[in-house]
Length: 129
Image (cartoon, rainbow, N blue to C red; front, side, top):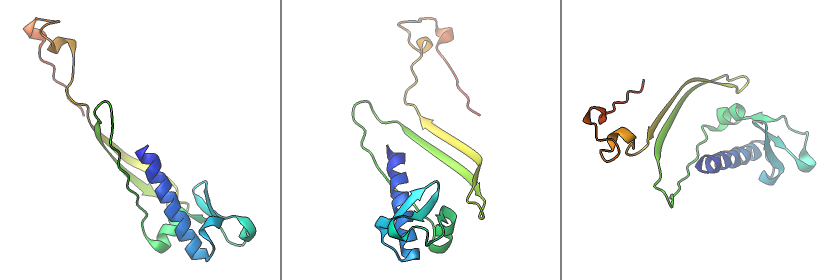
């Protein structure tokens, strides 16, 4: 849900900036297929603006959202993406995607002496590459 909230915020900001560039009401700007377009009575009077077009003129767009989890404890994770953006087409290519997750205390049959009293099986080492 947090990602959806951030995407909605970013789209709203892109629509606001496109409306300002064109000098039209924000209500007449729609976001479709990665581009802002003018709708309503002014439709067709302006060329669509891509995300790259808008940010090139107005700067980067960012969004922020938070959530308080209820029930089971929230997990913690970090996702980092390095992308290469084609300035002409606004196409993006993922160069590297890194994920770090805190899954909490690992529970495994061999780490539970009541279920498996053999101490030779009590240690499990995980290595992520």
